[in-house]
Length: 141
Figure 1: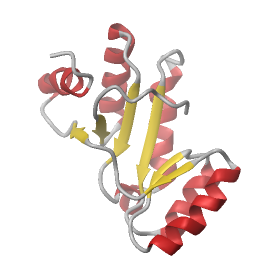
Figure 2 (figure 1 turned 180 degrees about the vertical axis):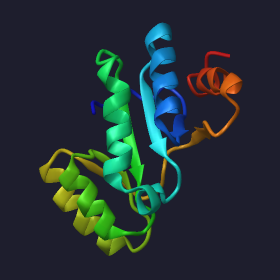
Figure 3 (figure 1 turned 90 degrees about the vertical axis):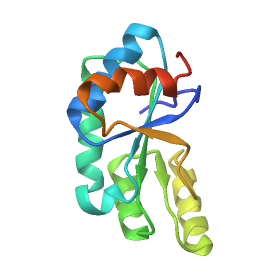
Figure 4 (figure 1 turned 135 degrees about the horizontal axis):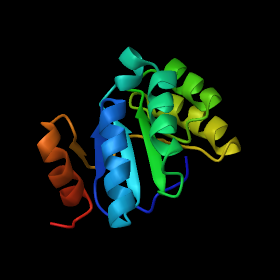
């Protein structure tokens, strides 16, 4: 999961169909992508589930620059699991001391821990509106 240069807002994805659509548009328009899970999504979907979605979406478009960010809420245990699974960008809210400790661990793997998610547009919209959300996020409207 390479680092996409941030050229606008992240896009909150909920499933493989949305991630596929975003990467197809990014490929067509030559845009890097920042995919972000919904707030606290790691707790209910599991970090492996969302990582698999990103991997499957990238399989057909390996040339698209993608940064995937997993929102772990305030659960440090899930954040540690996510790092072991290969996540390189996480959101971890909660106590700063805990986040700082995990940052030390993350830095060894060239990963980063954010205190809050980047500004994002949610793709939980009708299919016909996903392209508009992407264009808005990439400032192409």
